[in-house]
Image (cartoon, rainbow, N blue to C red; front, side, top):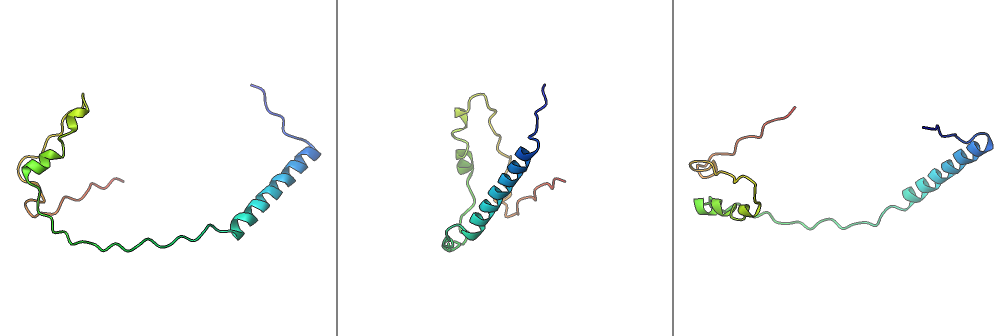
Length: 97
C-alpha cells in the first residue's frame, strides 16, 4: 500500500488557511443565526388510573397474532394470577453494572 503524500510548502499553508477560514465562517453563521423558536409542547392532563386488572382472556388476546411469526416459540403465560391482579407492585428490574 502506498503512503499518501501530504502537501508541502505553500500548498500546505494555503490549505490550512482555507480550512481555518471555512471553520470561522461556519462558526459565525451557526452562532449568530440560531434555529427558529419552537413553541412549548401543550400540557396534557394526566388521567387517573381507573383501569381494572386484565382478565385471563384479555391477557391471552395480546398474543393472538403471534402465530404469524412462524418458527418463533410461543410465549408462555405465567401460572396463577399476575402480580397486578394480586395488588402487588411489579418486581424491580435487575441492575446491570
